[in-house]
Length: 327
Image: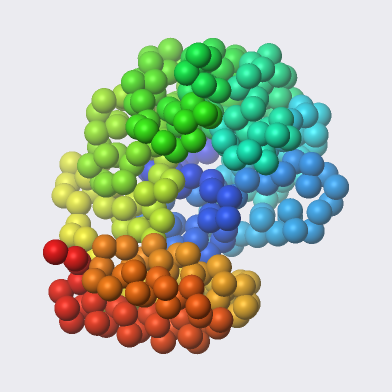
């Protein structure tokens, strides 16, 4: 798959997700075959103010490349400056114009921009002039049901030099409620000459196959469906190539990958942050297994990586012995 001058090994992308898609998470997803992974949202304002914590979000390694960097902001000039600052940190820049989180929206960024298409045009043009990297734009269908304007925004993005558009077909006011309207992806694909990436409601390998078949989109982006489930990405690629999706992972396989994830976290962020941040990931890795509720309760009381490892070992070994998945 080609986006601008960038050639990707496949058309399966990992969505940028705040608080989730840090370096350890991206490394795991890359090992399972993601063609492109993205940083968490990176504040353009934070970058130009030389914020150390903002630049930490750009930490990377060779294993995960190519890397997409997602920027957010509400000022075209600031966004352009940020794009220049990250020109050596990744292989692609994405502008977030779809985040529904209240804090982001209140700043005028994310999905708030869908209310001002003319400003979207200025922002894309400014970033396009500032960077030669492939440029994508991630949007939603619109602000609310009465202002669905993804087609207008997509056409603006193309005309101002974006190399692809990523569409999550829910409005900002929907958040993540209801169903993603894949028909919007199909409509956008028919209207644009640049690649269209579909996002939303891909939780099973067959969902990815169905989205591409129904919408003819050029690629798919996996978000919440990959929580604790990198096997989803690994199962999609053979299915899209006409093969069979592999069997669901056993409890022992989940244990192995969760352990790798914890090791990466410890190596990159240290013991304390790993112990706290990995709690949510381990809760996701346990979904659908016997006694998962008790495991989640135990994990959320753990204060060290050693305690997490002990809880993991006991839980996953018992799940394997007991047949694993709930009846």
